[in-house]
Structure formats: structure tokens, C-alpha cells
Length: 377
Image (cartoon, rainbow, N blue to C red):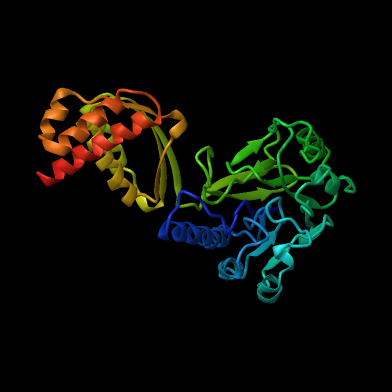
């Protein structure tokens, strides 16, 4: 029997355009913290090693600081050997991060790069069968290539791969797709015993055997990931495989549709935003549809401004948002404007009744004017 930890897609050095200032720094720090958590889970669970199934780094051009911080995090649990597989983000090509001076000079003893498809013994009777990416665009199924020379029986074999399974990809012309049926056949014949995959950021059990898994990313990277933030503890023998999720992530991506038609809807939106836990580690995208008055739009803008400061990021889901601002007589009377300001408001009213970007800008300007007048009164 062997017990090990399966993880992937650390993508250290990843940036996100919607994270500004210190939020990006916290995002970076969380990815390093996840490595320490993974090491601690491996120790607590009695895992002797961890396989990191591709895309350890966001690219081959990450900074020296990213490399050194990753090494320090892995070195914190020297009893756990980390086997790193180059993936499509960090292939083992001429510019590889794994060949850099910073990597070579500072690599801890418990870090091993899986540089070829030659099986590596991790314990007596247990071997890894790696399928590293040597280029960003391989022309064959690398996992199948790595398995083709194996025979059935004997030692326990753990395949370490990265990429899309053919059952999940819409592009069936991609020559690098991994054949799931081929893997199932190899498992049935006893040629291999577990397939540890990276590339899909959601933790996923693939196929019928219970021995082909994507671990998912230890920290989420986007809104469409179903079950990220895990590492897998795998207990394996020839007869059975036990795979247990262990949460290691701290960040969340949340997206929400809201229909706004009045103050009650704004109250509900305010409650939902206020009750998000760990706001400094939450990235939120809102799709707003419906119709609000000028006063309600001003209240919404104030609400969005407040939570933009509290959350790691608050985005507008532009493609799914369609919020109409319809000023009423109460809105305009409440402003109590005169002279030049009243004339400007009349111009904005006229523009707001048109269509296109000019109308949207006019409604936003009227809402801002409502907020400013309210703040001054």
C-alpha cells in the first residue's frame, strides 16, 4: 500500500487584471500559503510524497522571488518529497524555469523535477510514470507515450500527467488529448494503478474506475471552477484506491445575478454583500438587470463603492447586465436645483431618454448628482 498527496495547477506568479494594489499581493501570498498547507496535510495524513501535476508556475518567466518563496514553502516539510511535473504553462523547453539559475541554485533536497517519462521509484515497489510537457504544443498523447513501454503486473505504478481528457475537450482534432478509454484499459489490465492529472481546476473523478482524478487547483483562479481549493490524499493498493478531498484554499470567486426593481431588492443585495465571509479573499462579479429610480441608482452606487473597498474585487458582469435608470418627478424635485445646475439636469434628462452609451452616461451622471446633492444636504 502507498499513501501520497495529489495536487496540481499551483500557477505561482499568476496575476489577475481585476486585482489592484495589495489585493494582488494577498492573492500571491495565498498561493504560497497553500503550498505550506499542502505540506502540512501530507505530514498529518502520513503521505511520504506529493505529486504536483503540471503548471507549478504560471509561466517560465516568473520572477526569482516567486521561485524562492515556493522553495521555502516546500522546504518547510522536508519529510515530504514534492515531485514537480512541467505542464503547458511551464514546459521543459529552452526557456524553462526549471533550468534557470535561481531554480538550480536554491532547489531544496525534497524537490524533484520530473524531467522525462522514465519511471521513478518513490518507495519499494512503487513507481511514478511521468508525462512532462517538453513544449507548449505537443503532437501526441504524452500520457499514452509514457505508458506504452510498461508491462502488466509487478510494481505499483502512478501516472503523473497534465492536459485535457478526450472526453472533455470540444476540440477532438487536438493531438495532445489524453485518451480516457486507453487509461481505463491499462487500469483494467493492471499496467497502471492510479492516474494523477492536472489542467482542470475543479476536483474531478473521471471515468468508471475511481482511479483517474483531476485534483483541481489549490486556490481558485476563475468563476467557472466547480470545486477548486482542494488537494487529494490517495491511499492505493492493487485492489482498491481511496481518494479523499482535503481543503487547502482560502480564496473564493462568486458570481450572482440580481434583478433590481425597488428598494426591497436593494436591501437583499446589501444583505448578501454584507454577509460574505472573508471579504478580503472574495472576488465577486455581479450581473444587474431591471429598472430603478434615480434615488435607487444613487443608493446602488454607494453600496457598490463601499463593498469594492471591502472585497478583494467587485466586478460588473457587463455581458449579462442590463439595468435601466428611470428618473421620476420625485427624484428630480428632491434635487432642488436652480440656475445653471438645473439647466444641466435638463440636458442630462434629455440625453437619458435617448439610447446607447450616451444615455447610459447621462443616467450615471444624474445618479452621481443625486448622491452629491444628498451628501451636501
